[in-house]
Amino acid sequence: MQHNNILILDFGSQYTQLIARRVRELNIYCEIHPFNKIPDKLEEYKAVILSGSPFSVRGENALHPDLSKIRGKKPVLAVCYGAQYLAHFSGGEVAPSDTREYGRAKLSYIKPNEIFFKNINEGSQVWMSHSDTIKHLPTKGVLLASTHDVQNAAFKIEGEETYAIQFHPEVYHSTDGKQLLENFLVHIAKVNQDWTPQSFVEETVEELQQKIGNDKVVLGLSGGVDSSVAAMLLHKAIGKNLYCIFVNNGLLRKNEFLEVLDQYKDMGLNVKGVDASARFLEALAGLSDPEEKRKAIGRVFIEVFDDEAHEISDVTWLAQGTIYPDVIESVSATGGPSATIKSHHNVGGLPDFMKLKIVEPLKALFKDEVRRVGASMGMDANLLGRHPFPGPGLAIRILGDITAEKVRILQEVDAIFINGLKTWGLYDQVWQAGAILLPVNSVGVMGDERTYEKCVALRAVESTDGMTADWVNLPYEFLQKTSNDIINKVKGVNRVVYDISSKPPATIEWE
Image (tube, one colour):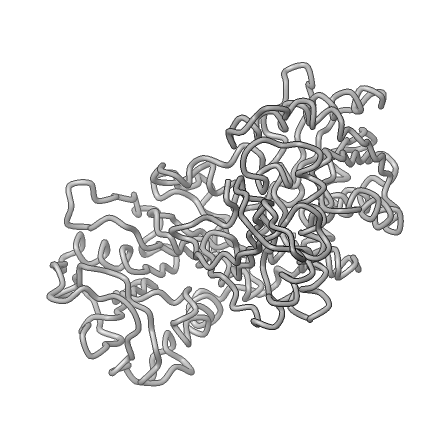
């Protein structure tokens, strides 16, 4: 089935992925491509959105897209940098703003009877983020909306289906942003809203069957959402020809290995559990540097996985739970930190002797979409609602070197914290939570004796995609009970702290 695809050209804005997620929420399929790598088959796209950018159109390093095959031929929505680009290079004028236009603003004027602003009223809040401003509209530009500080907040170009805005409709603070995107995509570009979880499952299963045929596929399960949903899609497509391997690296949560294996049994998956805890702990002995720990875990995982894959005769494919943000980051428009994916995300560095073809059934989906697809296949809500858990497991939550005793301590602490969140009905309000074992001993008093034992930090954040995150304001009563339980029940810990750092500047994990 051919969908009406939307092309988003990325100029390096931190909000580009958010545009895509908002478009997808309208059940419309879209793809992000770098501004300088416009796809050849433009006939596959029904409309084009130009993203914002950290660059200035007035700068020597201004980003110049080739819009000759797009403008006037397809509906275009230009956001922020895109809007300024259209103005600056098409007969208008962009100048430094007298005041940096950043944050909330309200629309003070909207052109009457304009389909672009259908069901949006004056006073609607929008989110600004730019230091330049459009002083004069481009040739054939028609003013559509203003705020108190920004005269040319929105315009269109006569004779084309080209619309431009100097605010960000994709961010939460633009209260009618979704309506604006719907007006452009559905009412102006006439796009069908036919991209649903159900349609994704049907089409993906069909594609997998055509691509894989009767070949065998091996998949490394982690117990997390992505690999589990990928496994179910493949299971629907090829049944027993899917061989899943779940490796216990000894750094999972308490009892997780057996619990997850039980859960997979109920799903009808063909899964083999491999307990390689001792092998991983041996490889980690004496390592304190986070990157060295990651590399050791990655190396041993590949060795164990490869040993197990060789036990299955005639495997052709390796399946991975890669999701869309990983794909976007690997082809980032402007390079920089988003261009590299952390080494532990997937089975990235596979050795040459595993000559397998790669299949990635989720590579078009964002995390929230993966969950919706899983739900449409009837998967367990507890599994789909699981917090993200790092590939290297507790190894990067134990600061310093890893020992079996430290793993035991942290597993106990983590179990008390996570089970407490569930008991108090807080688990689903948190995007990710965990405990960190610090390389610090502190003095305490238990009974009449002084102790000199470990300190643990608890971390709970709220986020939509992990790119930014805020610490969660958990109830004091909950923190008090959790702290008491940890200190009373976990031998070796006498102090608990709560991490109240946001990302940025801190990261979610400590290593």
